[in-house]
Amino acid sequence: MEQKLRDILKTNRSYINNGKLPTYIPELSKADKNALGIYISDLNGEEYGVGDYEYKFTIQSISKVVTLLLALEDRGPEELFQFVGMEPTGDSFNSMMKLEIVSPSKPFNPMINAGAIAVTSLIKGSPEEKFQRIVDLFQKITNNPNLQINENVYLSEKKTGDRNRAMAYFMRDVGVIKGDVEKNLDVYFKQCSLEVTCKDIARIGRFLANDGMLPETGEIVIQSKHAKIAKTFMVTCGMYNASGEFAIEVGIPAKSGVGGGIMALVPGKMGIGVVGPALDDKGNSSAGVKVLRDIADLYNLSIF
Ligand code: GLN
Image (tube, rainbow, N blue to C red; front, side, top):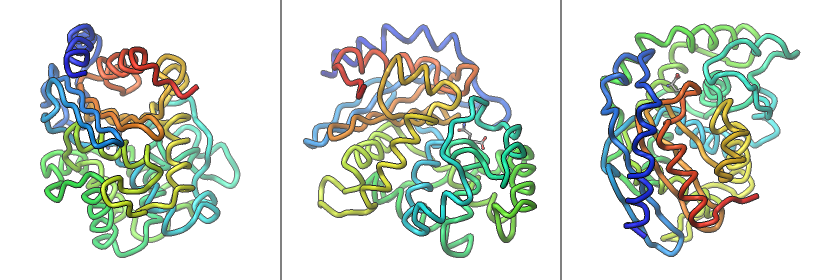
């Protein structure tokens, strides 16, 4: 298995050159463009890591899946979907274009920035409690008690996040977000700045592949109907406006982040974490997408 995964890394390394490091969060431009790693964690307890699977990167948008799970547990789908929609946008992840075109106004889905900011605002507790609850959930499902934020990325994002700020203020104006906008944004910037490895995100994938139950202990952390909602969003919106193409070419639920990570899973079987910080024009890891395509091809993983 490891040898096959190493071959896949080798074949797809050149796709790094099709990507660029993001600069809109200045600190992310300092990432190692050439890092490329895979980690697979399956439900039989087998784990395989190849390449730069210990490389640390910030989780960014992959965090949106976990905050969605927490908000669903806190509010239930009926309340949550009053504030955020269920449809793909076809626009980039940080677009604000569609915020104003539906009535009553709400972000299209929880995987775009606007939707994720709204979802984070729905998590119960003071801003400090919210963030602590988010970290606790991450630590539990990754089985990594050392998970913490990258302070430099957090400060860099907070300083330059005016587009997110603009959307958040707009959403308060239309009643999607309540309370202190800056404090809500601060929780969002922090959740995006959590530092992880491929192994951590593979574990999140495996947890979802197991429908919200921790495989080691059998503990039900998230109700399976909520895990199902999150996995569905991963298929329809997880790779932003490349989700359709990804569903055709790879065919498994996946969520990417501008830190270069992609968290993917095969229901009932395994979680897969991939990292490659160079991004394509949609904001997905350019080599990471190809690596996942080859893994899915080789093991016939498409769910379709
Ligand atoms: N923190 C990033 C942002 O708000 C997350 C976006 C992403 O990973 N696509 O822009």
